[in-house]
Image 1 (cartoon, rainbow, N blue to C red):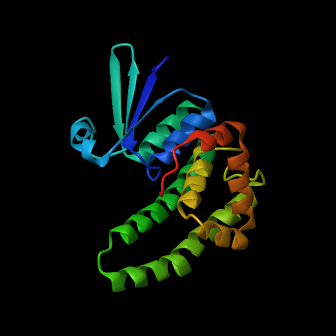
Image 2 (image 1 turned 60 degrees about the horizontal axis):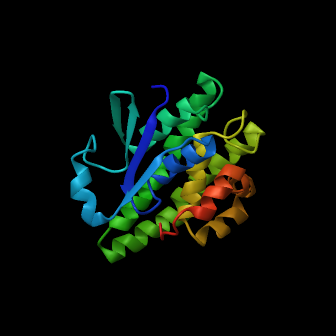
Length: 209
């Protein structure tokens, strides 16, 4: 779809949509960032492929494509904008680590939605002491192996932006994590200092998550 126009629909926070916004920003591609209040969701829900947000509308001429599922959208745009890896093999590695980060994102969602305080406390401890260090250790080793400072040897891909967003969602806790994973810290700094991303971070709305 050449000369496509992109409209991204999501609530007024980062979470699942932010990796998509970061891909548009890193690629320098224009898009409409439609952030709506929770009260407006019923109006948009019928437009979404699975009745979930975020979703993306891609319009080219008389054709409109509507995509749901944040990671599927991220992969589609990354391929379009050359942020998916330089070969099929690199793209597969990037996807693999992307799925690894999705595991962490999903674990975070389960923590948010757990109502039983006792169980929540146990789950949080398990996440902080087992799940998170294990996944970050795998990513740290991958960055060392790739020698580019990123997950892929060829440089920046969408998975680096996804990792950056995940770390950003950790708030103050990220600083402690960086002490144990110096290469992840360097990757975070590289993404943050990318000129296009740096400009976006200055102007994006401040939200708790």
